[in-house]
Image (cartoon, rainbow, N blue to C red; front, top):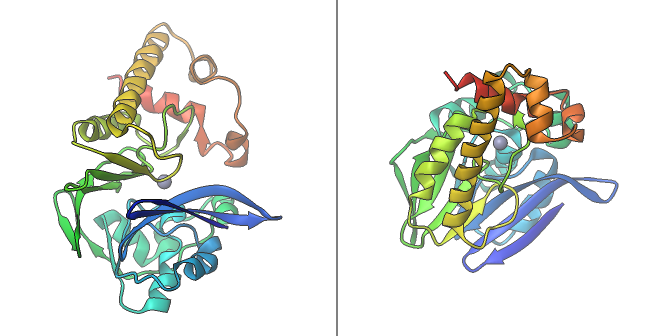
Length: 272
Ligand SMILES: [Zn+2]
């Protein structure tokens, strides 16, 4: 299932596997001219190709290696032939051999599916990709994943934030997520001159800088609250219930790969 929304020159694609006529576990990618930022999941790749019909695609910039962001690239590169695929060096390794480099939990295979191998080239923080009338500056922004990049179009004040920023308040985290690194990356982004923020999921916020600053503030409060409880001797589980609320369906579906406890653990690890 693919939904298309236009924000002036930026086209947003919300993509999900179609199960019984309903989209499940949505992911988001964007097109600016002939540049794609991420490519959705492999379960929806055929439909995404149809939606892209008639639009040139010269390059794909990947925010990070998760399968719901790289899964459409293989089919696209096979169909179009010459497409320049750019990613962080760690993501390039995954793109080269996803099954070996990024084994998927069962829930990830069901929701998004295995990506295909895709040849790509590595760039990193500070590099710039010229894309016709657009320029994309790469910002290494670890936290959600260690290979995470955001893409800044400085002249227009656009920021493509991938999964680093996907809305206001996190109640859970992947087991490999790092809240402290996310907060540091968001702090860096909050200092940029931005007009519009395009996240890798969730809605496009009305005020980009306010959204980023609000998220940083939320992480600060979270660290403060968790730190106080941890020093008072509360268990990880007790802190998770108090700070993040009651059990979440996603914790059961992912067998704990995405959970409130992971969020608390990540904060506690960085308390020193
Ligand atoms: Zn992700």
